[in-house]
Amino acid sequence: MFSLIHVSESLEIPTYYLIISLVIVFCLFWIFIRTKNKKLSRELSLDLSLIIMISGFIGARLLHVGYENLDYYLHDPIKILFFWDGGFVFFGGAILAAAFSLIFLKLKSPRLTTTYLDLFAPVLSFSYSAGRLACLMAGCCYGRYCNLPWSVAGRHPTQIYASLWELGVLCILLRIDSIPPKERRLVFLKRTGVVFYLWMVLHSSGRLVMESFRDDFRGPSWGLSISSWMSLLLIFIGLILIYKAQETKPKVSAS
Image (cartoon, rainbow, N blue to C red; front, top):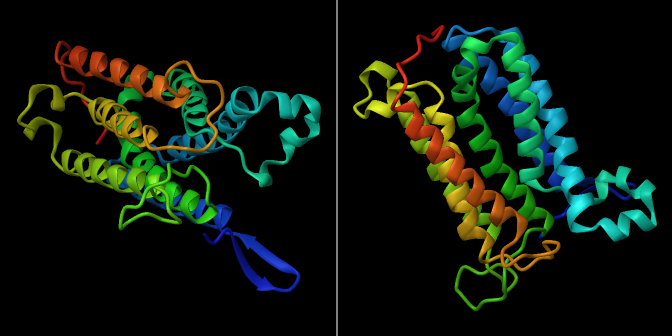
């Protein structure tokens, strides 16, 4: 793995944070372009992006601290702030970011909440796919030992599995998003919000598969890892939302 980039004898750059930083910059630029193309509020989109970044960071850190390694941080609480040492859980960030984002949208633009969910869905999908490559470089989120030809350091490259699956999800979302809602063949795809709901189902399905190969410490387990339970919950919620979308009249978006 390449956890550090040696710039000089006194300067090393963590590969994980470098990749994540580049991904964030790209995603912000992409959100700006998508917002402009769909004729939505760029100010609202950038505010929402800031909310997602801050709440996502906090949520991902808190779930790691509170679930995966609570005893360690209770013994030395100041290390909760040592985020540069690693320790983030994607679903923790996703859940807190979703909660704050929905509150923000309900207050600022309740009629276009599902429109903004669709706006962000492909960008979130890309950020996850690229983010897993950062995990690969850092050597975290690794899989069980195996002797397969594509193994990395003798283990299942679960980071690559997750990244490739999410890349496929991204292609599906972009294909649907490229077709005007009224021209989509399936009735439920004509509704706003469905692109995001599909991401919930497809992402979580891939996460379930990837979790079955993981071998790093995942915290206490109740038959499945907490990420697997969360994946099952998101699949269930996503399917319900897709089903309900078939029973509602299409909304007129601002695009």
